[in-house]
Amino acid sequence: MVDVDEDTFGQLVEAALDSIPPELGRLMRNVAVVVEDMGVSPNLLGLYHGVPLTERTSNYAGFLPDRITIYRLPITSRCRDFDDVVQSVRHTVIHEVAHHFGISDERLHELGAY
Image 1 (spheres, rainbow, N blue to C red):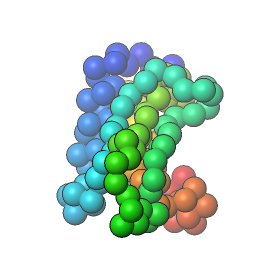
Image 2: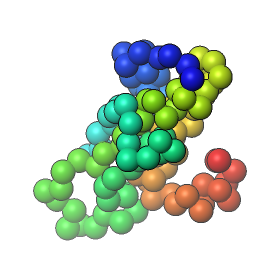
Image 3: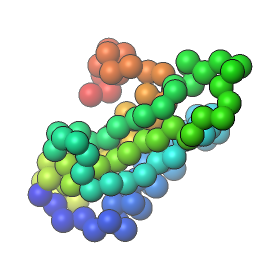
Image 4: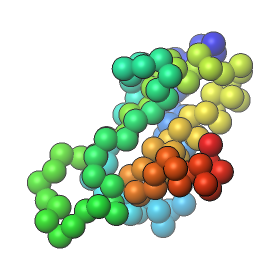
Protein backbone atom coordinates (compact mmCIF):
# COMPACT_ATOMS: atom_id res chain seq x y z
CA MET A 1 0.00 0.00 0.00
CA VAL A 2 1.14 3.51 -0.80
CA ASP A 3 0.25 6.20 1.71
CA VAL A 4 -1.32 9.13 -0.14
CA ASP A 5 -3.15 11.73 1.91
CA GLU A 6 -6.61 12.97 0.95
CA ASP A 7 -5.44 16.33 -0.42
CA THR A 8 -2.76 14.82 -2.63
CA PHE A 9 -5.15 12.16 -3.88
CA GLY A 10 -7.71 14.85 -4.70
CA GLN A 11 -5.07 16.71 -6.68
CA LEU A 12 -4.37 13.52 -8.65
CA VAL A 13 -8.06 13.21 -9.48
CA GLU A 14 -8.13 16.85 -10.61
CA ALA A 15 -5.05 16.30 -12.78
CA ALA A 16 -6.67 13.25 -14.35
CA LEU A 17 -9.80 15.28 -15.13
CA ASP A 18 -7.64 18.04 -16.59
CA SER A 19 -6.00 15.46 -18.89
CA ILE A 20 -9.32 14.81 -20.64
CA PRO A 21 -9.33 16.55 -24.02
CA PRO A 22 -11.11 19.92 -23.72
CA GLU A 23 -13.64 19.06 -26.42
CA LEU A 24 -14.81 16.12 -24.27
CA GLY A 25 -14.57 18.00 -21.00
CA ARG A 26 -16.95 20.64 -22.32
CA LEU A 27 -19.53 17.91 -22.96
CA MET A 28 -19.54 16.79 -19.33
CA ARG A 29 -22.68 18.35 -17.94
CA ASN A 30 -24.47 17.86 -14.65
CA VAL A 31 -21.77 15.59 -13.21
CA ALA A 32 -19.95 15.84 -9.87
CA VAL A 33 -16.64 14.10 -9.23
CA VAL A 34 -15.88 13.23 -5.60
CA VAL A 35 -13.29 11.27 -3.65
CA GLU A 36 -14.20 8.90 -0.84
CA ASP A 37 -11.98 6.59 1.16
CA MET A 38 -13.88 3.36 0.52
CA GLY A 39 -16.90 2.09 -1.33
CA VAL A 40 -19.08 -0.92 -0.67
CA SER A 41 -16.31 -3.27 -1.79
CA PRO A 42 -12.53 -3.13 -1.32
CA ASN A 43 -12.26 -4.08 -5.00
CA LEU A 44 -14.23 -1.06 -6.24
CA LEU A 45 -11.90 1.69 -7.47
CA GLY A 46 -14.51 4.03 -8.87
CA LEU A 47 -18.22 4.26 -9.57
CA TYR A 48 -20.39 6.19 -12.01
CA HIS A 49 -23.96 6.79 -10.93
CA GLY A 50 -26.28 8.71 -13.19
CA VAL A 51 -27.85 8.96 -16.62
CA PRO A 52 -25.22 8.57 -19.37
CA LEU A 53 -25.23 11.28 -22.03
CA THR A 54 -26.28 8.70 -24.64
CA GLU A 55 -29.47 7.99 -22.69
CA ARG A 56 -30.55 11.57 -22.03
CA THR A 57 -33.56 12.78 -23.94
CA SER A 58 -35.24 16.13 -24.30
CA ASN A 59 -37.09 15.26 -21.08
CA TYR A 60 -33.83 15.26 -19.11
CA ALA A 61 -34.39 18.05 -16.62
CA GLY A 62 -34.51 18.42 -12.87
CA PHE A 63 -32.15 15.51 -12.17
CA LEU A 64 -29.55 15.63 -9.46
CA PRO A 65 -26.03 15.74 -10.90
CA ASP A 66 -24.50 12.47 -12.03
CA ARG A 67 -21.81 11.36 -9.62
CA ILE A 68 -18.40 9.88 -10.26
CA THR A 69 -16.79 8.61 -7.07
CA ILE A 70 -13.11 7.67 -6.94
CA TYR A 71 -12.15 5.48 -3.98
CA ARG A 72 -8.78 6.37 -2.45
CA LEU A 73 -7.96 3.38 -0.23
CA PRO A 74 -8.68 0.59 -2.75
CA ILE A 75 -6.49 2.37 -5.30
CA THR A 76 -3.60 3.07 -2.94
CA SER A 77 -3.73 -0.46 -1.52
CA ARG A 78 -3.12 -1.96 -4.98
CA CYS A 79 -0.17 0.23 -5.90
CA ARG A 80 3.53 -0.35 -5.39
CA ASP A 81 4.65 3.28 -5.58
CA PHE A 82 3.41 6.80 -6.13
CA ASP A 83 3.72 6.57 -9.91
CA ASP A 84 1.41 3.54 -9.83
CA VAL A 85 -1.11 5.60 -7.85
CA VAL A 86 -0.96 8.39 -10.43
CA GLN A 87 -1.57 5.93 -13.28
CA SER A 88 -4.31 4.06 -11.43
CA VAL A 89 -6.14 7.29 -10.55
CA ARG A 90 -5.95 8.47 -14.16
CA HIS A 91 -7.16 5.13 -15.49
CA THR A 92 -10.04 5.00 -13.00
CA VAL A 93 -11.14 8.58 -13.66
CA ILE A 94 -11.11 8.05 -17.43
CA HIS A 95 -12.96 4.75 -17.03
CA GLU A 96 -15.76 6.38 -15.02
CA VAL A 97 -15.92 9.38 -17.35
CA ALA A 98 -16.34 6.92 -20.22
CA HIS A 99 -19.44 5.58 -18.45
CA HIS A 100 -20.77 9.14 -18.29
CA PHE A 101 -20.44 9.20 -22.08
CA GLY A 102 -22.34 5.91 -22.32
CA ILE A 103 -19.39 3.59 -22.95
CA SER A 104 -20.00 0.20 -21.30
CA ASP A 105 -17.46 -2.01 -19.54
CA GLU A 106 -17.74 -4.45 -22.45
CA ARG A 107 -16.88 -1.73 -24.96
CA LEU A 108 -13.99 -0.54 -22.82
CA HIS A 109 -12.66 -4.12 -22.88
CA GLU A 110 -12.99 -4.17 -26.67
CA LEU A 111 -11.08 -0.91 -26.89
CA GLY A 112 -8.31 -2.29 -24.65
CA ALA A 113 -8.99 0.24 -21.93
CA TYR A 114 -8.55 -2.33 -19.14
